[in-house]
Image 1 (cartoon, rainbow, N blue to C red):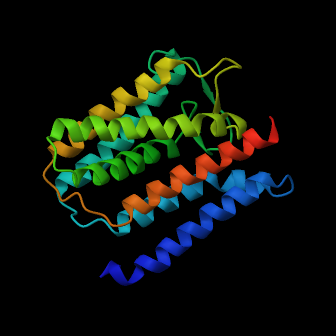
Image 2 (cartoon, rainbow, N blue to C red):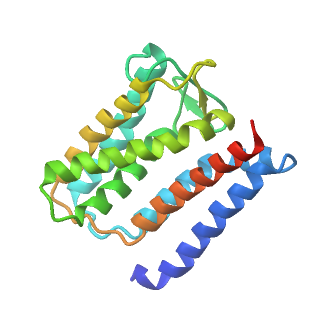
Length: 215
């Protein structure tokens, strides 16, 4: 049933991410587009879930677990510096609970979901799928970090992004994706690859623009 909506939804996402790239570069529009960031993340997740193919209790369990665990790990990270290093969230990602934007938990679900779907197609052992998917998560974070700092998603108190941040991302992703692959539900979603590709392109283009601006 959702197949007839695939092209309109994909077109909508492409337009939304393109508008975001343009709007965030325009001083007069940047405040508006920054305020829309959490809604874009939530909207992307909802559209992704619209194309999910298997709503078993095991999938619902994973969804709730990924949101809660992802959020609570960030709470631990912000308050102790233990997981990712010493950082603090800015205002761009919206409403916070315990100093962490609530949307962060949903973002952990969206990204692990997309990476999990992509590598589920690979004819390799499950442990290797898990490692590859978690590594793809870290690759995306490498692109996210410079943009996140510039747009006040979060900041590292003026220090370089620590290596432990990427190691922490990899370990948390590895745990979530191990659970993802271990649960018995179909891991098919035709929107997962295009959505993750848009995420990569969005942050890659913004990084290139930052580099060209010399900031």
